[in-house]
Length: 324
Image 1 (cartoon, rainbow, N blue to C red):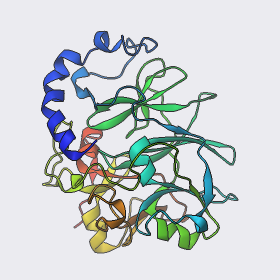
Image 2: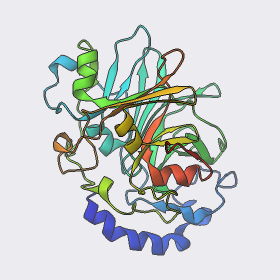
Image 3: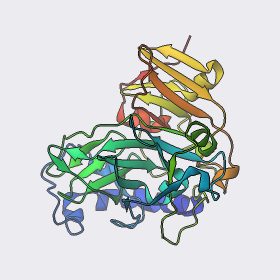
Image 4: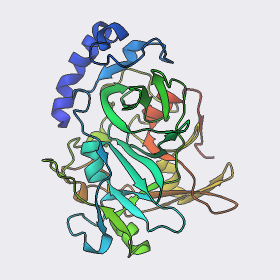
């Protein structure tokens, strides 16, 4: 979907929200989802993102190739890095996740879902083991507060990607475990892991490497969002580093380079392109790479680098670490 298409669809989507935002309307599309079980208070928060259920095709068990043999991806292009002790690290390129949003994978026995919501810049990896079952996730085609609503194919419950929690259906209230993964550039991954593996290009007819949301992260307002804007004069599309219910503005981190607060050490270094800036991801502006570690042990911690409006939408009473 191009940025122009998003703009043109906003007014129609918002205008039709009240009429279409109801379990009675969605039951025809989702006959196996129990809409009586839900944590959603206001159904008008949920909008169609345009594509229908599975219109954005999630991936499962993709192929991988050695990082040394990958020649299609630019050095600054972002990847989501997944590392488990004793295993060869894997990189999941954002150029593919932009078009598929979810990758269901099995990595050294770990059942994981690598997720990316372009409209929130939210990239989180979850454990797919839930209450003794392994879930497989798809893209519902719905958005809530502009964030992707996932669904699991086993119960067809709906899940909010940004918070990793089921919001509709049998599993409502169940939370996924976020894993300590992070976004970095292709070159940064390769320098640390010369023997690492990278996800191979999917066999779909997509313009991989092209950004369909040109200039989105410099827009004044988010699309398909009718909630409150963030406080403290923070731009809605400014990036923040989120750890649980606390957010650090990326502008502060870029200035200080390293912050040690709340028992965590957050570092920033240049060298990673935005996935939501120019037409080509590889040639987009540098927004840098964030790592979040336990200040005492140095272990990587689960976190997200998301847009400020999305943090405020899901954590309206969240803690903003603005600095001195």
